[in-house]
Amino acid sequence: MFKNITLVFSVVASLGCAGAASAGSAFQEHVDQCLEKHANTHDAASVTLQCTAQGGKLSDCKVVDNTAPGRGFDKAALCVADALPMGSKVGDIKIPVRFTGTN
Image (cartoon, rainbow, N blue to C red; front, side, top):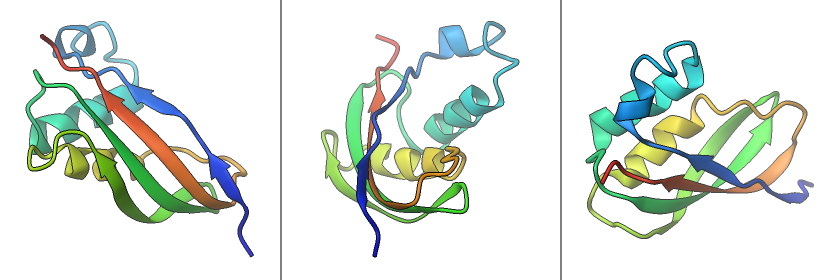
């Protein structure tokens, strides 16, 4: 049986900062790619995912809350979850993902 774990995760989605300043961050690059592919990078939104953590990765992620429905942030958060390292965490995890936008 899985135990419930809450993991808070914020994503600062700023293309201005994500360019050269964070070029060395593979994870930030992945976040930027997810946003560019699925959502408007200028808008802000919060998405909560519920996933299963096992073997250092997340699986079976579902969106349980989205402050900007229909704008693609749900897809962007699911994309980000694909690259989010979980280490030794095991169980059902709720992951709040916050996209701050570039306004």
